[in-house]
Length: 264
Image 1 (cartoon, helix red, strand yellow):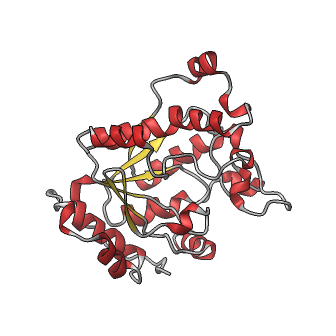
Image 2 (tube, helix red, strand yellow):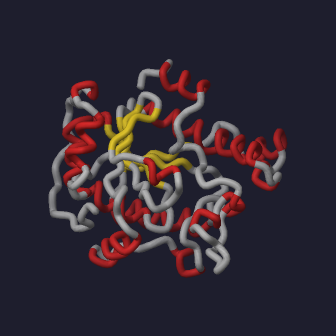
């Protein structure tokens, strides 16, 4: 497991990103396997330079990645996909963290407003089938994320996925390709305790809904507190019908074509 302890590094971002084709993913994963999170982030900055962005959901433990990364590259673009359906406490938490960490926040939303989507398709999250949930996620999450990566000319993104969170995430490597974009996961192998220890060590806040029993939080209509009968923390999302919103899943043929036809 990578160490959760950061240093006081405060490097400027590189101006000229390296050619991503100059490294081998398999060999790189072997080299980074035993490196701590700081070294993984430094490698990503050196490799991708201004092509590197990071994403956040302003979820329960998002302060960890936001603090860890911005200690190394303070002005990295931080992409936040705002669905328009987040809990009020998430918006307040996001504002407080943005000010505290001086984030270079880039907010992206669907071009279809919540009211328009509901008029055209109904309340997709309430239709109790995976197809409707997937349509919701494509409109409110996946499309804005793809657009963000394209507009920011990203070649790679840092994200705080951890292998213990979902079955899909257990299969991930520290560095991988999703479509035409590299993903780098500095805290992939961190335990929940390591995350908690980092929050305490750096006096960072967790999402206020944690105190109400939430262990993961997304939209208000598809998140709930953990119950004794839940087998996995992700059972509290999407009514237990699925574990992923789509942003971190391999692209289907149409989405891959969208990525490959862009300037990414």
